[in-house]
Length: 115
Length: 112
View 1 (cartoon, rainbow over the protein chains, first blue to last red):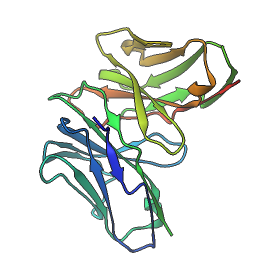
View 2 (view 1 turned 90 degrees about the vertical axis):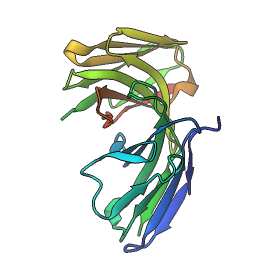
View 3 (view 1 turned 45 degrees about the horizontal axis):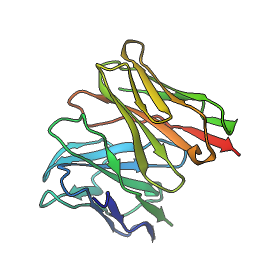
View 4 (view 1 turned 60 degrees about the vertical axis):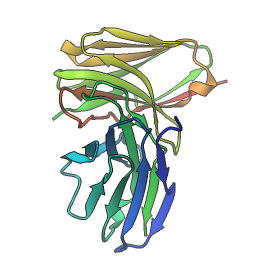
C-alpha cells in the first residue's frame, strides 16, 4: 500500500491552456473522489467514481472540466481553457466499499497556478 | 445544503495542554463524520471516523465525540505536542451521498 499518488505535484500554466492531472488510488479501492481546495478553505467536492462509473458531479464542475477513470484504476482530471479562477489545489481521494462508510485516503494534491 | 462551521479558526497553545476543537453542521441527517489533519501543502490524513450510531471514537491522544441531534462534533487532543501543529478539518457525510462537506478547519499551533 503506497497510498494515493497524484501527479504532477505542481503545474503552472498560462490562461487558456489545457491541463491534465493524474491520480493513482490505493490499489484495492473502488471509490475515487476529486476535490478542489483554495487557500484557507476546506476541500470542495468535484466528482466521484465507483469503479469506472462517474456517479456524481458537482455544479462546480463546469463544461471545461472532465474526469475519467477508464479501467476503474487510475483517474485523470482535465481542465480545458484554464482561467485564473481555476488556480487551486486539486486533491484526489479513494476508499473501499459499497457504501460511503469507510475512511477517505487523500493524495498530496496537484497545485495548479494559472497565470 | 450542509453547512459546516469550525471554531476557533486558529488556536495557539503551549506544549502539554489539552484542547478541544469544535465542529457544527446544519443537516443532522448524517451517516458518519470524519476528522482529518492537513499539514501545509499536503493532502488530508484521516484521524477518526465516527458512525452516526456512535457517540465517540478514540485513537491514542485523540478523542472525537458526536452529537448528531444537535449537529455537533468535538475533537479532543490530550497532552498536545509541537508535532500536532496542523490544520484540523471535520467532514460530516450524508447517507448515500458522496458529496462530503468540509469545514474550513482550525489551524492549530503547539509551541514548545
